[in-house]
Amino acid sequence: MPDPIVPPDPQAAAAIARVKKLMLIASLTTVIAVGAVFGVIGYRVFKSGESAGPPTADMGASLPAGAKVLSSAVGDGRVVLTVEIDGAVELRSFDLKTLRPIGQARLSQKP
Image 1 (tube, helix red, strand yellow):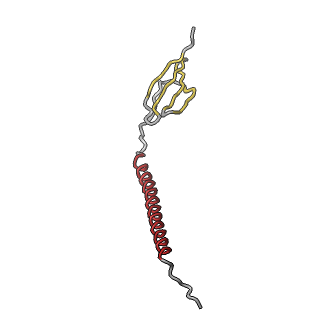
Image 2 (cartoon, one colour; image 1 turned 180 degrees about the vertical axis):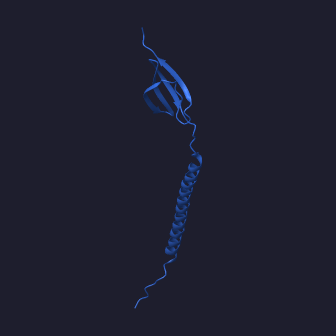
Image 3 (cartoon, helix red, strand yellow; image 1 turned 90 degrees about the vertical axis):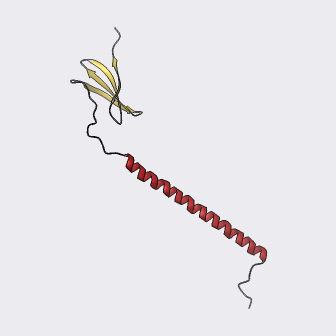
């Protein structure tokens, strides 16, 4: 009966050792890459929780008494309101985060 476990010849043993070394390097690289991805995800999760502060209670855009809001639009960090004041139409822009006035424009008809 032949011996089922035969030691490989020296060239085959060297090739097997080289493949084991390359597999170890590839496995370590994969573990480091996965760890880096989880580290970045964890960092962003914890940092995003800190940056969102508590909502301020005194936020509000002020309009004159008797003003009627005709339409609104939100975009590019701004809120634009179309307002009718005493029969005249105005566009008023506010910062989206702070609701502070950015600008206003009165619209009028040509005579």
